Amino acid sequence: MMPWNIALWWQVNRLALATETDCDARVLRQHVERERYAHLLLAIAQRQSAAALASALSRPTSHLERRIIAMRRNAPRRPLLVASTLVGAAAVAVALACSTTSPSAPSNASADGSAAKTTGASADRAVDGAYLDSRVDKQARAYPDNPRPLYPAVLQHAGIGGEVTLQFVIDSTGVIDMHTVTVVKADNDLFTSSIRSAMPRMHFYPAEVKGHRVNELVVQPFAFQVDAKP
Image (cartoon, rainbow, N blue to C red; front, side):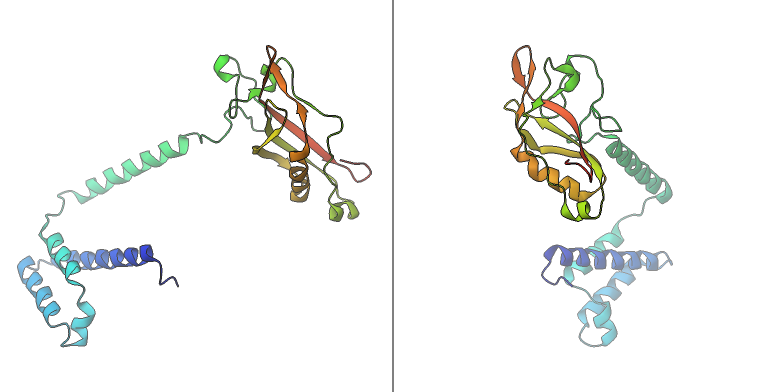
């Protein structure tokens, strides 16, 4: 389906070599002499144009060379022990990978999306140097004339209400950093899209710490009611 995919062709080539090498190993386990079997493969490769069977068994010279080299290698004395060790190492690697915290995930967010109450100077900041709301002297406040998100017409006509809770950073200039917007809860994706469209036009009085404007991580709910504006 993807004849232009070079990586796919390379994988197919490697798979074919692995299959042939495995077949060689199975034959040799039947107490067949390696030298005689290698001569047989060479003879088939030399006569590949003489018979259909030979053509089917033959592969490029590089494959044949690698197969013969693989046959000359000594098999591990305890294959089960080697396999078990490799599987154990892979399991440990997977466990370590799963236990590593993603660097992009806010380390201070609790399960319900609210900011965790932490202590210590190192826990004062959350995402991209933003302060938690509990660590600022003055929290960010929205301008009174901020635009309201539009109520999606489809949901309003259907009489469907809902609520969306977003987590985001308000920077020291009072503007929302759209790269930090995270959905904590959303009853409908249309509500979320409406809020995201309005957020670049929202402005805030920035948070302050010791008289200096700082970035603040906030968790903000937005409610949509059929009989009232959001």
